[in-house]
Image 1 (tube, one colour):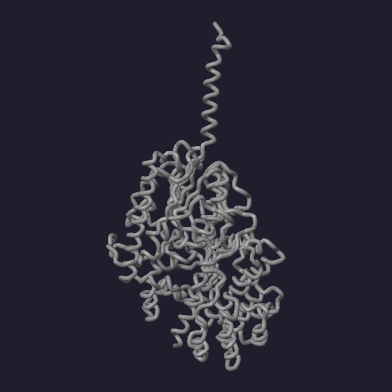
Image 2 (cartoon, one colour):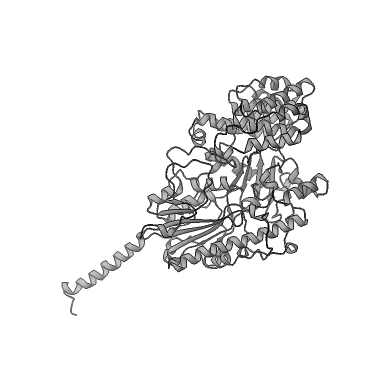
Length: 623
């Protein structure tokens, strides 16, 4: 047999090199990434089994891509949810969990667009930011209504985010409105009363989801017309659950469960997860903290260890989490602290301020017609227990079975047969607090004092500034409301740590007169505490549950602490909330309340309206 000469072999060698070069080029090629983000809607989408929804764009995308059935936004409201997204860190770890706030960014860490730009991507955002953390330098290549992937340098892969506001809470109540979905055909969840206002709002919500779907359709059409559809990985998701009251702002599944569909073209099939198939579903637990590492993984970059999530796509897919975590902090001017966790079937809720009702008055929420109509029925005593629960104090613990009770209205926390699952989820929630160094247990004003121009994240990771184990133990002791814990809480009023003294005063106040009166001497001494937030809660307990001169002393102290021009902004906010909770018991201080300043210096523009709204609400009551 005649062997090929060396020269005859050269063309074969060249062909081999050509193929090798092509393969190498394919490996080096990075996918474009398009994020289609809609505001304030849960999985009310046709492809998620909602026959009432009209969502042709999302349904078509689901037929081509992978639909995630268990995705959580971590926060049930926009700013904390976006703060978690942009940082790859739980907002409870950065101190950005409040709605709204502005805190320093963790020293030396970056936001995901910065990491993607370092990986060679052009990053554009059209156009919402709304983060509760300060930008650590230049974040986006472009972030504005005019931002677009078309403006990238030639040959540069892009990460482009397009946000539609069509389904935002504000659009549920916008008038005039041409109705599309029939209110008579709406499914009313068990926690809402079945009244015309509720049906109309739900129907208009569905109309706005359809409008948001159309926005996404226009963005996909742009991609196809540019010939980039098969070069681009597409994500579609919402920024948290439904904008309807008791979904938005609440870390139930109804407030956190979001639709998530991902399409990965065939040419990038090496970046698909093992369970990817066109029109398929994935039961992997996914949350917003996982998005930053996933972007880096798709770009071929190993996610840094400090990111708190796990990549679910790309070259560096991480282990699937066993649990998803949610949270609620202060909502505008109203204080709260809630943590939640799910294993995908059961949802566990831990209320650390259970003495506060669910339906605290938030001006923006009350602009949706459902809310005042619902509250009116409560005031008239015309709600069933499931509907009325929103206007009552919270249980310290809640547990719901999503399979048997998708509306989350039957609390199983006291059920003997569910104690094992409750204990497992409680343990997961407590371990999560420690793992991420949750700073939410430090009063907001104290965090600022400790950070001193730095970041709450860095405070949280400094054991000298944050004795996490002891502070969280005090919060647990205070908020479970066990009457037997009152003597121990009274002792903690003299602890060296102001956060522990804060929880001690709160815990006594939560328990009412049986705890406050035996601790009266200790609470009176706390009125002179060096930390003003401790004085607020000592005064509140005395004013609400003390008698005679003691109650007057507590009330007078509260009014003094409510002066935002004389006190820490967060101290004044807490004092004004306490006065509001006192109701008619504050009437003797009506003249002093009418004299409170309405506009004071705020720590940042994002806080500016909170004190004025609280003062205005109080003054209306006592005018």
